[in-house]
Length: 78
Image 1 (cartoon, rainbow, N blue to C red):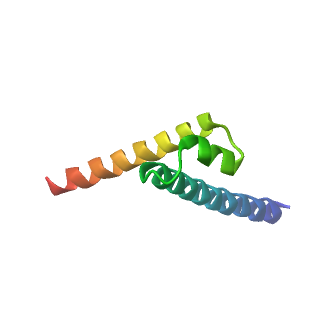
Image 2: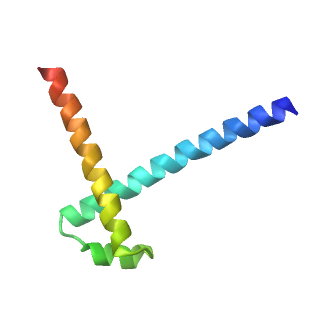
C-alpha cells in the first residue's frame, strides 16, 4: 500500500508539472497574439471558450513573469 501511495504521488506531481507547462505555454501564446495585434482579447476568449476577463488575467500573469525574468537577468549583469 505504501508503494501505491508513493507511485500515485509521483504520478500526480508529474501531471501537475505538465499542467503548469501547458498553462504557461497558453499564456505565452495568448500574450503574443494580443501583443502582436493578431487577435484582440475578445477574439482570443471567443476562440478558446473562456471569458475576456480570463484572457486579461492570464496575459497579466505572463507579463509579470516576463518582468521577473528581466529583473533577474538585469541583476546578474550588475
